[in-house]
Amino acid sequence: MKEADHFRQILGIKFFVGCEHEIIDKILRDGGLVVVPSGPGLKTLPYDEQYRRALLGSDFAIADSSLMVLLWNVIQKEHIRKLSGLTYLRALIKRTEFREQGASFWVMPTSDAARRNTGWLSEEGIHVVQEDVYLAPMYKGEIVDQELLRLLEERRPRHILLGVGGGIQEPLGFYLKEHLSYRPAIHCIGAAIAFLTGDQVRIPAWADRFGLGWLWRCLSNPRRYIPRYWEARHLAPLMFRYRDRLPSV
Image (cartoon, rainbow, N blue to C red; front, side, top):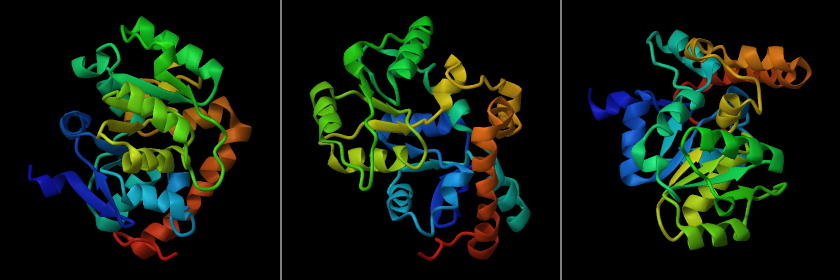
């Protein structure tokens, strides 16, 4: 397969549409920023300048949104493959380079999530010490985090995993990419690890493979997730209007 066949430009963003092992091989070799845009996130492209800038500045955007992939295949009459952040993370944590002591640094949303996630990682044979976990503050406005930068420059991990919410992790990842003095692999994994650890509802592998992760989340917490995914309906008119072009601000 030619290099160009691994990518599609959708809404002005260069999406990787190959398999998870291909993108992991590239990111392990070269470093860079991996983003996993959701449908609710993508519909903000016309007005969220910080999010838009982060996606454009990423090295790899994974085609994780089931709705985006479905719409693209209908509009373009082709078949690209959905690659979920969960599938990507499952494959990443199996790599020998990733499992080495001190190779990874984790940015997590709460102390409870950090405790549960590091416990699960330890059971999987990935030992993360306290110094390699950072509890993200409540970011507001333009995302800047000098303390996180300082810690990363001290420890210089090869992998930085951002497990905070969509819309925040992408600008944070781009900020780190722009300001770090070295080039690690920055993975915006969002809730992917929470699906594995039980911090959020566990999504069966078959449901993830068929793009039904959103349904599992809605069933687990309807009041929280149904409104969120309902908002993603605004992605459809953007896709039909702009297709491969970046939406106007």
